[in-house]
Length: 453
Image (tube, rainbow, N blue to C red; front, side, top):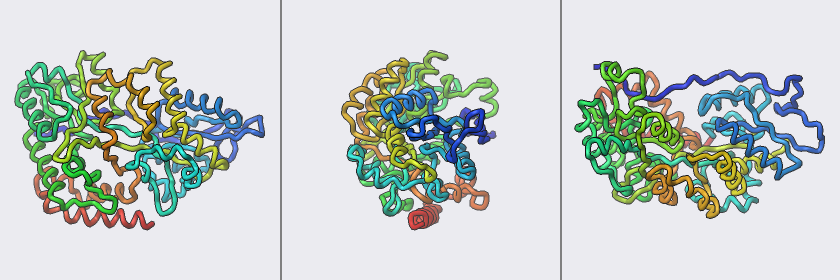
């Protein structure tokens, strides 16, 4: 029977770059509204986050910096890759924001969108507090072209109601990935008659090969990246990929048939309680509150399961950049710092969250500020397991998706129509051991070319 493998709720996001500026068209060449005070520096800012929070942070920044006015740009729409595409349109029109988030730093670099901020970063003592495993990202040659903004923690959401219903003990927070797999099988066995699956995958993939080697070897990074190359021919990578394929074949991973979906109706099976565990990141913690309020389902967020070397939480990094079109690079850097890694900006963000009565903190500092971390503790009790993940952050292993040149191009190569690797893998026509050498050679070739260029 035909499987419906992806259970992601899709939202329609605008791709149109609408006109910017005030109603009278009084914009400067960078898309900023003209200020009546000629002595003021005028900047513009854009990201895909909470616009209410962004505006409140900007207001506080302006109060601290009376000579700077910041306009929050609303014309660059979408999220992630769509947002970046619209930035390219803004660049072509000569109206890039002075500071903006970006989904892929190499894309911005190769298109000449980004300013080298090395001189401001190097003179900023606060950058010393940024964690070592994050500090050296987005550095190409002698230049630094982005600031790390936030880290999101990747872990496992557990539907606690299902564990209780099937009398399956909740795992300890320091569990390992063998336990994770066995629990998924137990849930599927117990819940098969109720159309309950063991695991909801990460955007259609379990990513065992990406993360399990990082848990088995202290010096192995994200997807076997060691700082110089990827190592897909390693036994750890191949065995993890094989385990992933086997679990998919055993019908443990959520892949609802058309008949099963007809029984469930027009709902997302995870959100209504038809899946025991979901591999996810903290930017989706909103689901936990929604499931609790809408369906009475209690969900925890367990640390990602460890391996032979211990538990090293995978983290997802976001970045912001200063525009190559800005007329005020130093002021733009200060704004980028305020909105991202800076301690003052973080303390202000937490003040605003308390004023708004927010109960969920879904992103975390990239720097070791004890005062900031102390204040985040009030958000830990709302979701069981979240504090345990945060406690492990000093051992985190960040992804390379948004900053490593060539990485995005490699996955485009894997998925193109000519190679069609995903269909071949799904149909069992090729094994990880057979394609690992070609993948390893190709990704290292593309990354090496990207770094050289």
